[in-house]
Image (tube, rainbow, N blue to C red):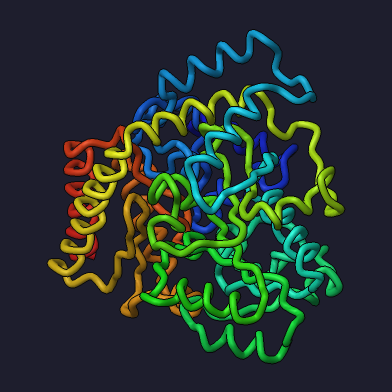
Length: 430
């Protein structure tokens, strides 16, 4: 007899392409049917068949306080009483913008949008408008949303599905997008030299988290900052994943490297549909209606999302010790997985930083896109299925990150490590 999830999927594929509204939700890469979820609370998520899982997706990062945080939920319910969408300027927009700009030194002005994709698309446009240049340098394996110009050697769902780019994206849309190798400054220099005074910006995930988690080598981000200063290009940090997660000031604060522009995702809305881009005042002043770089959005700054975001950001800012605790739990979980891999002679590497981590089934240390692609995706699928069956909810892709929340505890980490060791024992038998 089919499960409720399986019956829902059978119906979904009739009406929704692939049965899902985002490719990262598909279980295609692991050869399974997606689990349809009903709800979540704290560190747990529940499916429509009544199964309970320890959640290491956290809605792809934004649920840093855990699911359904009571203070965030209260702020949303109260905001809903005034209407779901006003389509006008509201006080809460000013409050959250002021809060962010006064607390994060590299964000002097900010514009709210509705998604990380929209934030990146807009940041790239303003970089071009400000510099008067056309070219953009990105890095292979870094995912910056699904706008046409960024779907070149992208990671995340594109990487999982085995489609390096996308049908429907014209050559004209990508002709000004140049691709460098992550962690390789020389590849960036070569592109800058070959396109002298034509590169508007270098955009990078400061910690690449869409080809699995790949950390920047010491000096890499600093090197990008120096190259931008020397060539007049802007440095854009795509912090849709790392923003407000590695630290309150994101990867920029964590690594001490100041970008010219930064993009954020759902974490600034407590997980609700929202994004933002911000940075230097002189650059952001080019955005309409203050300047001539046009960008608009009817739902931008939606009061419900802004209320949720304001509450979440205030909690994070007023309790920065939460970041130290997340770092400690990260070392316990990811470091523990790494130790177990060594103990059982598993050909795997665990990359992690703070609350972000990923397990690569490869002999090679993963420092870039090419090395990430050496991972054994078949073994990942077996690992994924085993962990899911034991109540551990992971992203159904070798090339996505694991996320910890403030609601994960030592006991939960211990349980996870015990299950992981059972997988290793099972692997050894096989």
